[in-house]
Length: 164
Image (cartoon, rainbow, N blue to C red; front, side):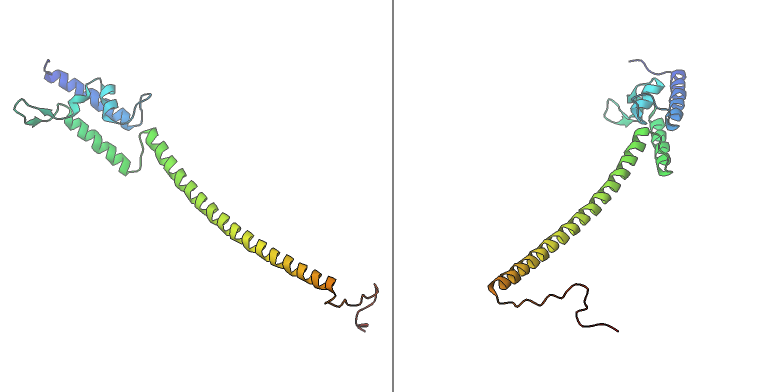
């Protein structure tokens, strides 16, 4: 594997910084996200350069572009903290989460209304059943002759005399 010359490394760093600026402005390629994988692909470098390497003796050393990966993550976190969303997928995710929360509230409110109406219906049906039973009992008493009918007044006459 060939080593990077200082000139190649400088050109790659410039390409990475340019790609970083584009991604952080929200200029994402189709199917890309605002992440290291897309950054590497846009800059034309391998993604492994952003991660630490192991020496033959087992010690670790920073990757050639690890400092740029850390800078990218810092800038991305700063944008997120400021409320700016560079990735349209993140914006869509936030919008869907807010919509989901609103729908959950609406469902809870409707569930409460349904429970209230169900209780009202149960009470109304029980009252109607009690009134029906009372009417049936009264009709039965009328048929058995236990209740005396009141005399019917002729239409147009006052039941208790005139009010004048």
